[in-house]
Length: 177
Ligand code: ADP
Image 1 (cartoon, rainbow, N blue to C red):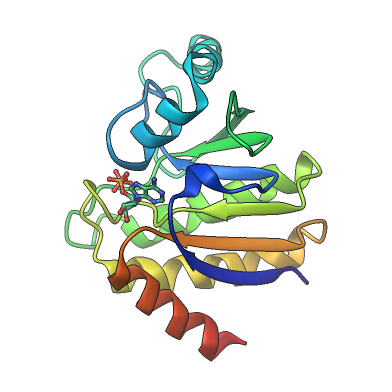
Image 2 (tube, helix red, strand yellow; image 1 turned 120 degrees about the horizontal axis):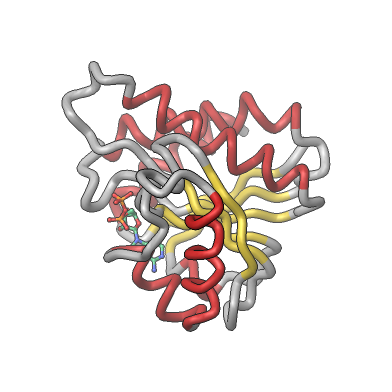
């Protein structure tokens, strides 16, 4: 089964098959990691996103919990998988299930595309306000549950931007390994 790793850093620099973007439903780019990915990838990425958006529902090209895949423009990665995490509303509006769905759908899409290595940011833990400890637990649990269904994936990297997330993930992965 695929190895799980944790690093602290900037996801745009990673030389993996696919990096995951914490996008918004419009797929039109935004702040945080989304902005960093679009800046580093160049305008080609937004063009691809807009083509997908046109083909899907105009109201919500990528609903919360869902994922779509594009090329990666000028990034070292080959693909970007755009997924939309839930906004935190206190936890009783399906947030854990939606967040788990983000990680699951990204891995299953990656498996379909023959991707062997994939890097995730800490989805929803920035502007969307999801408590970092709860998000980390859900993320690790969802990846662990999904890896047996994605046997082609050899390497999953959790890329933490801040120290708090890095400590949380380190502890969870140590407990897991
Ligand atoms: P969301 O709207 O899903 O909360 P954000 O982009 O605001 O998305 O934040 C998600 C996570 O991505 C946060 O933990 C934030 O610190 C992190 N982040 C921001 N920039 C980068 C980056 N360049 N590489 C990796 N993670 C990043």
